[in-house]
Length: 70
Image (cartoon, rainbow, N blue to C red; front, side, top):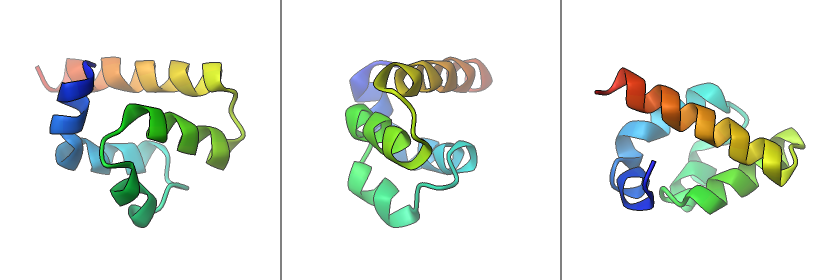
């Protein structure tokens, strides 16, 4: 997902993000503000993922999100 689309749709995406990565709190999601790098970092921190694993999970999430919202 392009950066501007991700940030631009953050309010809609945020609920889906929390459903997938429930250990990330509302306050943390507010701090992330749609920044993909911050979200990847938070996934790494909360779930003990490598940077590559977090990126892969985000790519998969983005693909599924796009498919559902065409």
